[in-house]
Length: 146
Image (tube, rainbow, N blue to C red; front, top):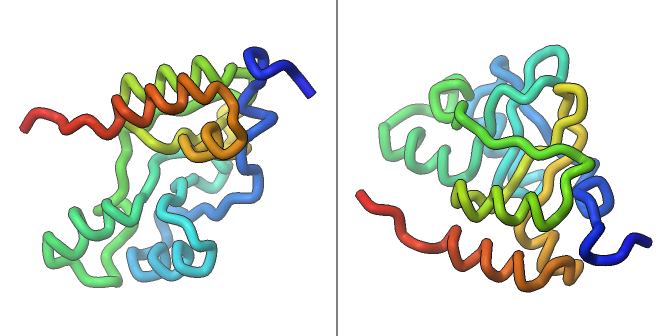
């Protein structure tokens, strides 16, 4: 196993992840979140390229709060402007990016294809770069200006 400071996302990322496509609707996404016990699902195209991400918060804020029905298309509520990581990226690099963009999860792509996802909790649970993960969590949790 690599030293902590040299750990890469490939070593800690979750590889078995649920995905949805633009053909799915909000109800189907919510069911998949329930079944997989997750709060985020990447949205991919037919080539498995990441084109967005949908969170449980997206469903609530852009879906329910905007009075959209369960049959609403995924693309209506998903987040399109996403930040992506690479499997060879160090945990330290990823933590800094996550803190900078105030995100808790980072889809990981290789050659444009989704290969995994890393959550801030993955860094903390595996005690990888504890200081960086703690710092990232603190910065991510800071309220944004309205």
